[in-house]
Image (cartoon, rainbow, N blue to C red; front, side, top):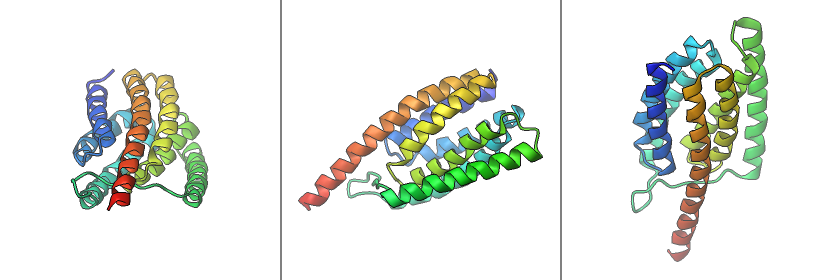
Length: 193
């Protein structure tokens, strides 16, 4: 375990806790986490996941702006749900992106586990975009990403990250429950208005 890996893990926990609570302050924690995580993953030759951190950095800045603009009357962040057609489109795009990126990494780099790494990276991109857009569905994607990440990081002997993603898995389930409750409250408020 490295100092950077442990520090990234602490900021990661703070980030997910704040997302579950629908706090806009998750974004500063995320910016620090992804910066530190990128360094750790690059050193482990998980280039897809390392590059993903650059994407996360940019999308977290965008998310910060979008979330700040989408508050309810009481200041809470409003949630939404992706429809069935949208879900099918997102799954198809994620599968195509995973195949394309995995093939590129396998043929052009010395990345270890290029396909596994690509699946974590591409599914994470989809999950992050859905979270940034406040779709409850993001939590389903994060559950899958966390399961894949636990295995990958264990395999790469990144044990702090393995433990972190076990916790993230539990937090993703908690996030799904909390965001569904928020959706129910929003519906009740809309019905009474």
